[in-house]
Length: 180
Image (cartoon, rainbow, N blue to C red; front, side, top):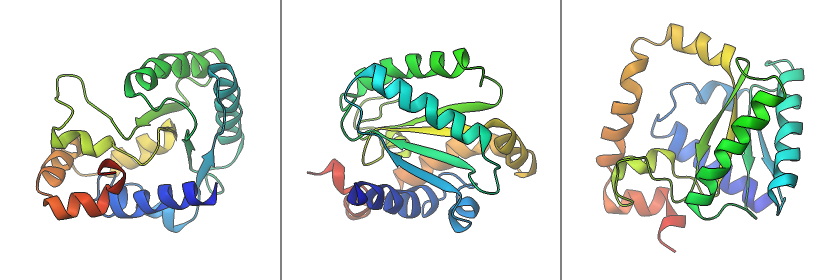
């Protein structure tokens, strides 16, 4: 389990923060208010129960103690299309529990593929992670940082340019799990 957490922390620091794909991640990482929780569920119902627990924990914990959660799924949803289908379930869990408007879920997966792209398109690297991950985010915190960021609409375009500029060697170093 520690190896999985270490892999995710390395990805967070080298890819997400190191490439500045999320300009808001460095501060909570420095403050150690990002929770990396490894979920060993093997069924959708068990995963949904863990997701519900993590949403409640995030909602009920002050942001100064817990800003965001990366729920890592090393035992499930390895197939991207199955993972993508589960995102609908995750959104229903969030809504049904009453967290809509307070929390949201962002998605990361080793085989992430944006609609309308080919699997090998570089822009998919912006959401590729060592394991399937559900990123639980406080909407209020997101709104606060976006309000202070000079041009938030440019973030996706900047991210695509950044990953397209990576050399093959950089890609192998930053995304070793894609080359196994």
